[in-house]
Image (tube, rainbow, N blue to C red; front, side, top):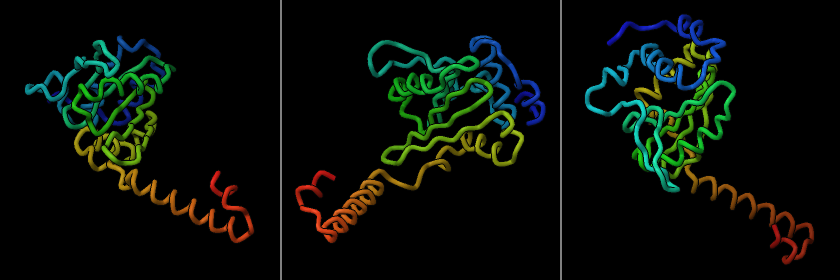
Length: 189
């Protein structure tokens, strides 16, 4: 494995970088690997961590996820100040072809946004700015992405949220009945 890079060196190198996505994304990702002590796609020999993972789009056609780690994440880069929401939409089109990884990550070099993609859970988003990578918490979050994605699995399921909402609506309907509202009017809620 290549030499590591310290959090301070990483942040100093990438702060204010405004080069285009194609110019920097792979080097940025390699530095992230070195920052957390993980092999790079070039060091990986079993094909479970690759740049430019070919992916069929859910709406048809072919695309390429910038980085893919089997069972961990799909990763899409965009240039400076690009819309990371659009990058996330693009990555969502690839997720089935990428074996539905538990994390979908987008980055514009200055920011890394981690979207959970676990089945039947409430989706969560975690954003890391460059400065966050100099903190133990930020670095730990990034290590989870590379080594322990299931540590980011939300504990709240969609069913639990639905049940809680239904209970709250029932409570509100009961209050409305107590204050004399007609059942027809309550039903609209």
